[in-house]
Amino acid sequence: MPSIAADKGGLDDPRNGLDSLLRPQDSVLVLIDHQPYQLTNVNSHEPQMLVNNAAALAKAAKAFAVPTILTSVIADRGGRIFPQITDVFPGQEVIDRTFIHTWQDEKVVDAVKATGRKQLILAGLWIEICVAPAIQALGEGWDVTVVTDASGGTSVEAHEVAIQRMIMAGANMMTWLAVAAEWQRGWPRTCRRAAGSGIAFLWEQQLLNTPVPKDAG
Image (cartoon, rainbow, N blue to C red):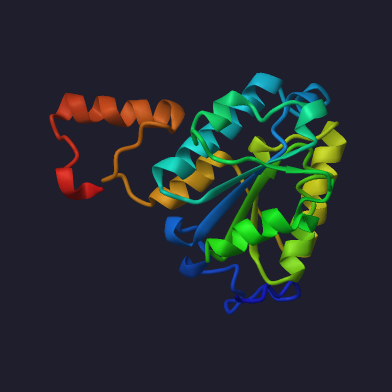
C-alpha cells in the first residue's frame, strides 16, 4: 500500500495527478456511528440534511459496487444506525464497537483490509472524535478521504478544527456528490442520485431523445 508523504506537494506527490482520483474498484467506504444519540448532539449541520447526505453516499457506494462497512458504538444505548443507511444494505452486519476510536476495533480494520482496496473513504458522527482515526490510518499508509457533509460535529468549530487537523495529517476532504462524481467520471453512465443534476440529465435525455446506450454501464 502506497505511503502518503505529508511533506510533499509536488508533481510526484501521490495525492496529485489522475491516479489520485477516486476509483470505484479501489475504494472502500466506512460509515461510522450514524446513530440517533450522535445526531441529537450535532450542531454543525441541519440534521435532516446530514441524514440525507449520508444516505446518498451509501446509495452511491451501492450503485458503484464499493464495499461499505457499517459500524456503530454501543447501539443498545446510542441507537441503531439510521434505517436510511441500513436499508441500502439489507441484511448486512453492523459492527458494534465499544472503542470510541474506530480504528482501534480489530473487526473494523480487518473488514477494511479484507476488501483489498487502498482508497479509504470515511464519514461519521462525530467527525472530531469518531472520524479522527483517519489520522492513524494515514500513518499506516492508507489513502484517506473524509466526506465532510456526510459527517457532523458537536459544533461548527469542532467540525472545522477536525477537518483542518486531518488535512494537516494528509487526508483528502470531499463532499458526497464530489465522491460520487469521481466514481462516475463520465455522463454516459446513468445518474439518478445526484440530486438536481441527475434529474436534469434524465430530462435532457428525454427531450433530445438520446437514451444512454445499453452497454454504457
